[in-house]
Length: 396
Figure 1 (tube, rainbow, N blue to C red):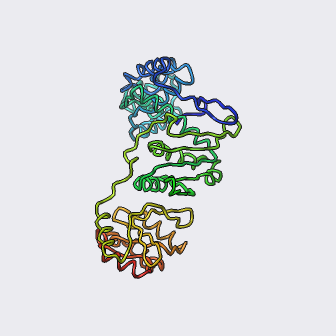
Figure 2 (cartoon, one colour):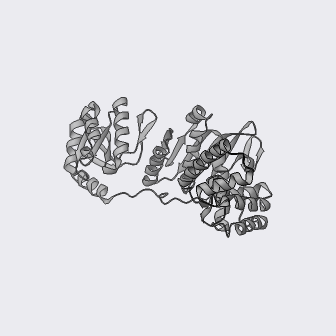
Figure 3 (cartoon, helix red, strand yellow):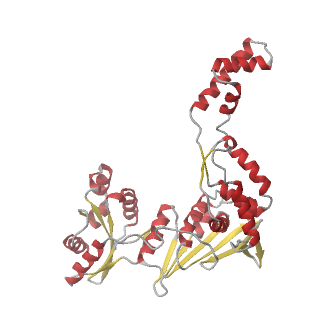
């Protein structure tokens, strides 16, 4: 993120245009190289000294923004608990000497050094070493010139999103795995969203407007949206529309995959889909009793919450989603049961791995949930075709 004074943008016809930089621009290259040189010997230096040196080079808003990006790459040594102890000992001794002595300043400091048992210069350094500018750089993670340019452009977008009141994100040509990952990340970042999937165009639209209006004063929710954006930008086709408050005016902000924003995500192609799903789908469809397919769409389960069923079953004219919870889904299961109990959703079945039921809290939650008693079932490791047939037959 950048501070507002480092943002560079223009406004034309009510639209906001960030001043992105290009790695092919000679002036940009010169700016980046000069700042990289300042950080070449960063390890072992005090942050205050490093910042002072950088200030002499970072003389323009663009250079200041690049400098902040590079400063964020510095890992500092965390202060030890000894600092607090020494500081309190010195304060206590100072008060004692002040009350019982009329010595001059030199004698006063000499007495403190003698009582603590350390040289005065070392004590002065130590008691202030936990201040931000006095901390020592433990390590510096260098960035290439192109990485700095990409980080600069992305930082502008993330900071503007923190100033947003309305945000609508649309992703196109999504695979099933990517849709699952989008929903997983919405949950991870605790985002509330109206989600709409257009099957004809295979697009997924996420409207985040309402919550941002509600929480905009603290900007906490907007920060979650900003943290969510890098994954969206890693997808092949996407666009973002937002209303941003910039210099006391509301302006529109538009981006898409052609804007030059570059991010990396190890899961941008979607999460891993275990082969067990294909095996059980094939086995169930061969029986001709059920028509089963992998979940390719989300379900609105109320309270601005959504789930992405692992399987979708069509039987006797009804369509039912099946969501499976394994041992690593403990926290998600509790939330899902609470929402399902509240919304009384009828077209969703929840399967729970028996290893989860060894947890007393989970087991009790399932036992007292009237909804789970009707729409839930148990399995071991992965549900067999017979387990799924019985679960569906019970509710159709």
